[in-house]
Structure formats: C-alpha cells, structure tokens
Length: 87
Image 1 (cartoon, rainbow, N blue to C red):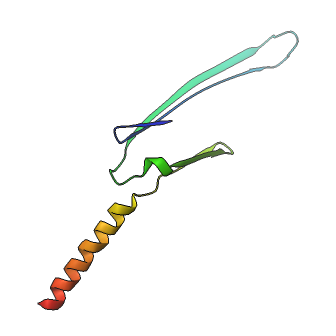
Image 2 (image 1 turned 120 degrees about the vertical axis):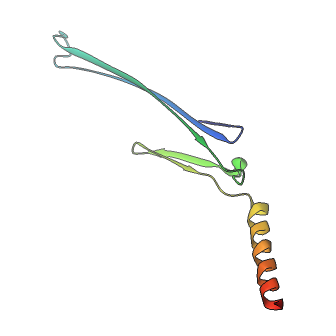
Image 3 (image 1 turned 90 degrees about the vertical axis):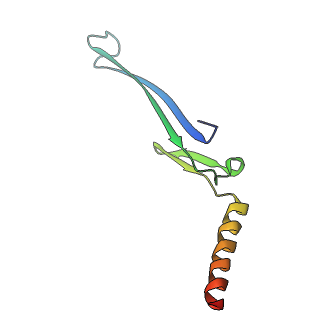
C-alpha cells in the first residue's frame, strides 16, 4: 500500500495450492491471483496519521482529515452566519 500524489494504491498477490492426496499428488491444483486498486484521495487527507489494519481477511484504512482544512470550513460557515445576521 502506498500514497503518491494524492492517489492511494493497494496491491496484493495470493497463491494457494490444494491436493486430494498429499503423498501421491493424484490431483494438485494451484491458484494465483493479484489485485490492484488506485483511489484518488481529496487534498484534505492527512497521510502522516493514516492507519491500516488487516484482520480476518478485511483491510481497514483510516485516513483522517487535516485539521487546518476543518477549521477553515468552519470559519467560512461563521462568516456566512454573521453576514446573514447583519442583513
């Protein structure tokens, strides 16, 4: 997993094999596969505090917002409220 120029890239590969008779290999199957996903992220993501976990076959990624972007949006809302009160 990596982030480059606001794009989160997830790559994975798996392989497994199974056989009906482990000693004589009358039938043996092998499966392989690879996964690739690229997701464009907003500029408000704080990559430094990102967290990821893999548990029971589920990948969870937490990407918090940058604090300065949050407060800027709130200050815009305050400005709109103040303008409405003056009118």
